[in-house]
Length: 133
Image (cartoon, rainbow, N blue to C red; front, side):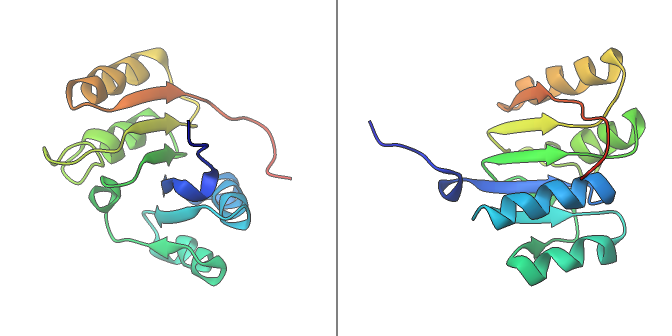
């Protein structure tokens, strides 16, 4: 059996605020292929200095093996996942795994998880709290 490494995965990152930027940056430092989107593009652009890429819409991350989300709250999460330009909403290719690091309520999480499953994407809830240090 072949061993997969982080370098074998394509990673999408949605939400590059303080915590999200630090986490995406660490993935880049570890050699991952990371492409990011943020509502305010300028907050994601410093990732390019580490070899990351930045896209203009969450939809452009649909071809990634795994997509992490770390956004402001439940409505933001639903929008970046299932909205008009959401990573899961275009009907064609979707990421293999969606990992949500946003601290949200169970209702929103369940809603997106069911939608993700219906389009062939697995979802993991992985809420993060604390400091980015």
